[in-house]
Length: 136
Image (cartoon, rainbow, N blue to C red; front, side, top):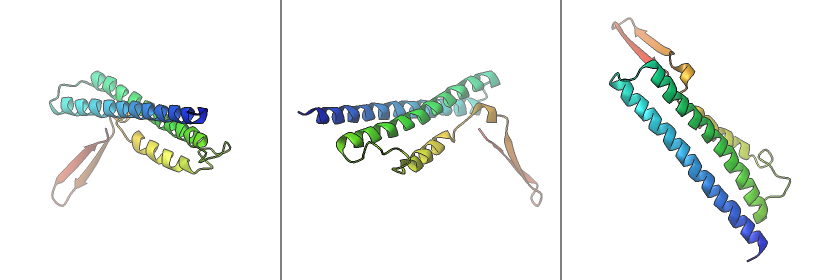
């Protein structure tokens, strides 16, 4: 087995590890969000507890954004060692930055503690009804 094959296999294993880390952080964030919603439903969550849980969600979101960046960087290195890209290629020259930013933007749309008190209220005067939507 040549050195190049070993290096490409090593980068592939690193990519798989980063994928597992991403799955952990996304699952952790979704799990905490489900806990928050269930506790809110039964009115067993005060504002301090909710802020602490939302902080965990925000941490997992930021960690997921970072792991997405690391994954794309590892893909670049892996493709370089496989000979599919040159050493001068980067996220911008390959146009992978668009995909990465799209994924990161989708991940960022999650519960954030400082949006907790924001509410959207819509009133329909014709039928005397109103609707209130909580941002978080």
